[in-house]
Image (cartoon, rainbow, N blue to C red):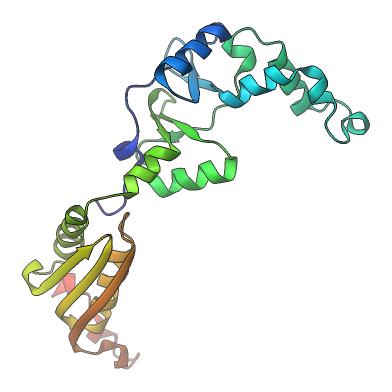
Length: 238
């Protein structure tokens, strides 16, 4: 596996609540488990929303603070404003939660989860299966920890997943050194294009900071004429 999946870094034991759970109980759970958000699930496990610290802050500020937002008097109560006001009077999860929940599936790349968190300005994503059933939760902290991979693991991934499985190469032909996430590649390969692909793929491994390639090649296939495609067969067909 070159790219880490959400399932590799997510927390599987998730604190969740049903829609009817009182806010006071949710606050207690958040403090007790030291989490900043809790998924809200139906009886069948489907995720319908998330109650976060931000939802409690809305309630704490009160209705007048919501109505005093710039231009609120001119624009009137939009759907978003009405939803925010509903949180102020909320007494249970179903009224306070942010819905629909922004979720992600366990087999999606970690980078996709990171992009989604940034784009939607959330700190966590409930992880669901194809039916929308809660199977875990991934936070920004989980993603950061996921990218801190030991140098030995990075070297193993490059050797086993890229050299052996992707490029069908003898791993003993290439020297791989990793220090603090910085990769150095040395050795000789058949083609220049192979050296370039290897360096590129190594750089795509989650946790790799940089790649320095000192690879050499026996054939500079970048100079092969375009009218001789039969010379450009991939290594996997040798």
